[in-house]
Picture 1: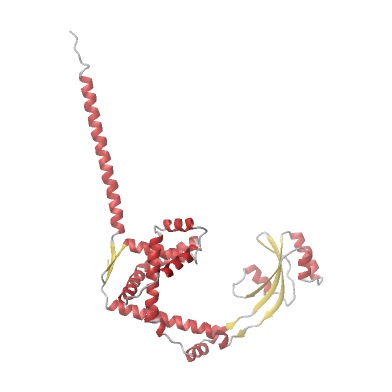
Picture 2: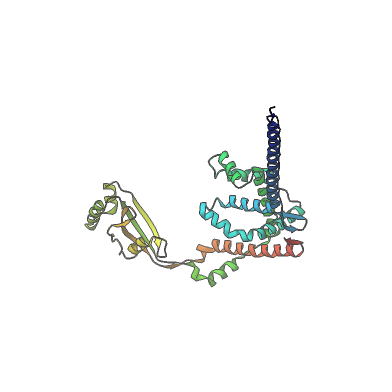
Length: 323
């Protein structure tokens, strides 16, 4: 009699497949839970409360958006690593700045100040001009985790703050002529123009050519004539001895006598010849030359002082809690 064992094998295979399917199902379910937990954790981190300002809640998302908006604004002044360094240097103070902004914004809304949408749109268009196309602008926003609607909201809030500061602070600041005169008289040393040197220069690609031209100039040929004969560009500069020029150029320029020509000096891959054409002596600037600048300086100084004082008063009568 033959023992039929082949029928039991399919049952074991079926049982094994069933067990394997359950394991896969459990693994998928576990991965799903893990992914969901990660998403929830990230969402929670974004919505984590970082501060309370009166009736406003400030979340981590608000702070991130504030940092991103600040980055977009600073892109007009800074680029690449310089921009990153600037943002990093500001980060420790940005939460305090955001809280100040919330207080000012609350005051603007309490005063029922309105901003026309046309002003917001105009500001958006100004920002867009920094980019080659609308697509590039949208991509830049995307990199900062923001949309155009986010930017429009931030700009509107910014304009609201400007409006309330203008009404509460700026319109009340006055700088009288006596203040300008007093500042000038007490700070005359800040209005001295150091000796300046006016000079002309030629840049030449070849060392032999540079030496030949130098010999011509030593024989009293004019720099302009030499430049014209050899199709070279003649450049004119004006500089003070304070690190304004590269050291190797400054060392040459400030040792030349009037109308003297320097021997060729190599800077990177070119040869330069310099001629000193004028020496402007040190002089004291007059009050009339600087009164507009002094007025602007005093106005901005007083504005910052009054703004700080006003915000401090808002803080004193507000509920603020940093989590």
